[in-house]
Length: 569
Ligand SMILES: NC(=O)C1=CN([C@@H]2O[C@H](COP(=O)(O)OP(=O)(O)OC[C@H]3O[C@@H](n4cnc5c(N)ncnc54)[C@H](OP(=O)(O)O)[C@@H]3O)[C@@H](O)[C@H]2O)[C@H](O)CC1
Ligand SMILES: [K+]
Image 1 (cartoon, rainbow, N blue to C red):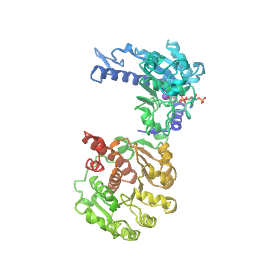
Image 2: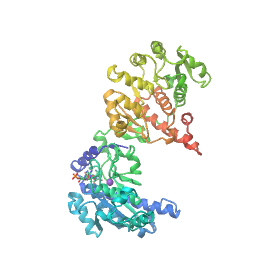
Image 3: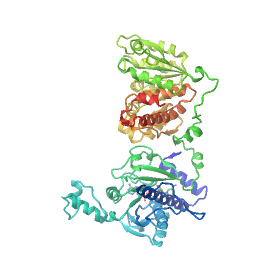
Image 4: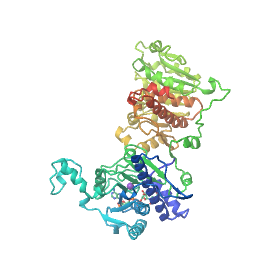
């Protein structure tokens, strides 16, 4: 599934209108119809849930005649308020009301501004809606709902709200209380910055009203590119995203504001995205197979042997963080590497013997405290000759002259490399990406937001503000595959590709999850996948394994341990 920025969406829109000759009005018609259909489906689903009626009765089928009239019991009780902005997002809402009315659902328009201020296609849709007899109101102070805060109470004019009962009564009599649900067609991809007044007040009141909200294209107040949310941003139950998935809906906190996201075609051919050279995708089975050309079945050759499936060498682990190296190594085995070696401090090795019998261990540092030493670099380089992929960093720790140690491995090994944890911290401190020569083999960096902040020389908040943009720029600039971890992990390639992962579970926010991912990605690379393929497939499988492991911890998914993820790979 393609992911687009607001500008890319505008370009595709323009291409469709100007080059393909599909009129803008018909795109808007399709958009509004799709929104109405999702509202109708949502109403149906809600009522079925309440009545405990099985789902799936979307189409009536009477006497062999099929119709898209939905079966919504008690449709007459539905009354939706449609919030209309002055741009084309408002135009979509104005189309939707006609279809809702036709489906027997009562609708009222609430314009943010004087409807005469609408122009172009939105103005034409306004006229059609008004001529169809749809009731409308224009925003005024009487619609303002204030949060139940001191500030809110102060702002409320002439009413004493000291008792919570009177506040509740006021809410019940308020104009918002007449409606069963709200369609947010205030602002779409054309909005810039924080919503201005009266948009901000409308958004705040819609949220406070407690009514279910279905957003047209994006929730108003969301940055369509970054996923940042304005102080006043619609909190939707469902977002009906039009034509292509907007980037900001894939990243938090935008993903929370959007609720369930439904991407609906509006007549812009999917092929236009490919022709336009768009390179951002949500990771789905189709994308893994068709875009990344991965055999997701992971079928083994009948005549394969351990040499067929590659050899990973994990370089890491220290006395204080022994488990990290062990988990990365075990994950590399579990994901199917033919062989896995673990280079670790000699003192640590005697404690690790027998933990994973399938693992080969290479004593690397003779430090009595079980730490790494810089003078091991050359020996490690020689040892790596037999490995197909290197994974450096899990549990490594920091040590004297570690910059020089990593630089030797970085420059003198020719294999693909996965760099994680303290491997990344050393790289940041040494400014290795700008000072050291670029590696020829695939190099995958797997930072969490804090490590990414150090690599990019900015704050963690800066990273989280625009994860996709930062990942894309960084991977292109430094010629690496970047895996920016966190909910909705991003994989970015040196060529500017973006892949966003949706699998995973909050329970995976636990020590060792990252080490497992390092093992998974390096293990997939050992089996012949490129750095980009392994990173995208790896984050997908890792997330699935986390979901599976959480399901098994039925009593308490928060009890999930990284080791459980390995067992579910
Ligand atoms: N191909 C498609 O996907 C189609 C999408 N459609 C829908 O159109 C919108 C995009 O429409 P557009 O008119 O470009 O923009 P908006 O409706 O989002 O809003 C633009 C108006 O809002 C004003 N504005 C901008 N920022 C703010 C703000 N922070 N606060 C208040 N108002 C704001 C702006 O006015 P200015 O005076 O500031 O210029 C604009 O008037 C897309 O999201 C889809 O829903 C089409 O219907 C079909 C094709
Ligand atoms: K909207």
